[in-house]
Image (cartoon, helix red, strand yellow):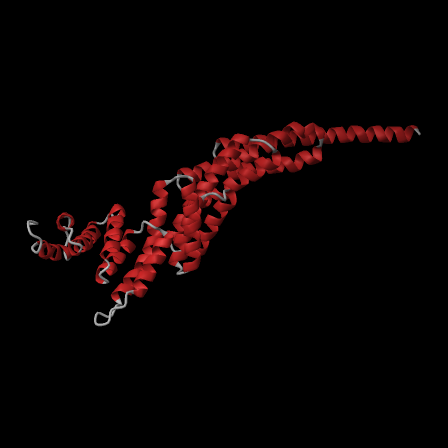
Length: 326
């Protein structure tokens, strides 16, 4: 009985001795990680801190404090390494470190400030990488970047706008229009006029190309404007303020001797057109419609606003036929 008791006691003493020795090793391992942090070797420090976790599990309760300290340092090491990459604008390199910051801070339930910042930086990094990959024609990777951003924030309409541009480059028209529509809903909800204008510009660019193709394809000897008007109406359904669509509708209305609609389309188009040459084009159509409606003063005022060729010479010719216009 005594032998057994001594054996048990001896075992306890032996275990305590090993624990003390292992705790010292845990502390040394942790301090090694701290030293590397001070040298900005964050990857190296992570190896040490993760080793502390393994060793602390073996040592037990006496290493609890070191375990907790290592758990705190791991997300910080990921975060600090991410910051180095972000300062260099190396978003692709920063992304995995930001992801690991969030993951480990969540797992260990610590570092809430760094976790919150990492979420914001990660969202920005996904967007920046989406743009970079789009410009570099890495379209599938760009879509993945934007989808990751949307997974974090489903209301991030700028990501839908980015996806629309990618789909446009891939000639995936239905997908492009769907993403532009989602982006537009988001911009309207945020009352973001600048983004809305940019989104509409992307939508308009697609439809305006179709309208011009239909207009240029018209047979001058037997003109049929049905397809032009259909394309223009589709454009206005997507953006009621598309000035280029309104210009073509004004031009077609004048050709069809429908001057009241021509005036309406031209006036609305002038509210939104920004390019000088198309401002001239709209004013020429407006002046033509007013002139043929016997509203000569308004016709003269509109025609005087034409400043760009090939529309200027046409406007001058029309003004010469309006008494008192010159």
